Amino acid sequence: MRTENGLSAPFSLIRLDRVDSTNDEARRLALSGAAADLLVVSAIEQSQGRGRRARPWLSPSGNLHCSVLVRIDGDLGRAAQLGFAASVALVDAFHALAPGAHFTCKWPNDVLANGRKCCGMLLEPVGCDWLIVGIGVDVVAAPPPGELLYPVASLAEFGFDGSDLDVLAAFTHGFGPLVGEWRRDGFVPIREAWLHRARGLGEPVVVRLQDETLTGLFAGLDAEGALLLDQPTQGLRRILAGDVYFPEGSGRPLPSAPLGQGD
Image (cartoon, rainbow, N blue to C red; front, side, top):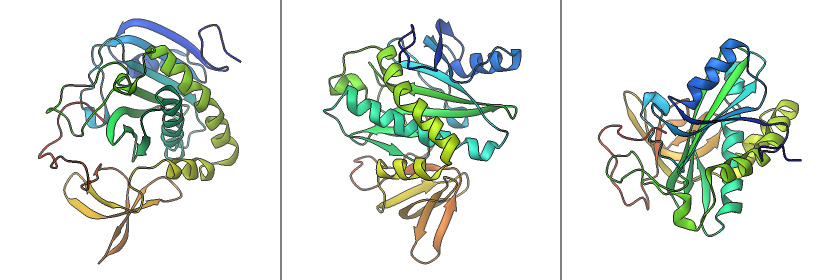
């Protein structure tokens, strides 16, 4: 069933012309007591969009800038698994909207179109009751090249000619059932679905941490969602946070410093 705003029930939507950040607006709603489970805040433009590690997120009109408020049970570590559920829903939505491209999940929170980043995510808790799932999708325009961590793409490059709200509706159609599955059955089915759509499973990977750079094979996810890096001389290493690169076939050297649009 669809609601009057075009989203799948039980989602509700607050649509704004311009906001500093949809995540910040969602936080304000939660702190004021006006939040609702699966309430979506979407804006035509953001003036202070951001990604992980406070990296700026370019937010032109026509792209999707939204944040979903999800009620949680106080376990913030477990709640972070919802990012994997959102990635699965986004990949499936993009395949339906732009069937000419191949979309994959990249750990921890990106979606790639033919190996190029088209979507990023920022998860932020509000106390112990709410998780904000912030999502940015390059629908009509990708950031200029040369300023970013990864090669980028927009959905329009692959034939999609709809709006940001069309993308949002397709995403919520898949995300709602996955949230229900996660609440009922835990992370196991979400983990398997994500791995089925993952970029680079079993392939060489470079993981850049804050104070070191690691290489190995992307061996999968553990039971909590950490990346498992198989290093030939050291065995499996569990990675909780880092920037991931696939050196084979990327066509780009690793950047010397984080720049540009957040991930």
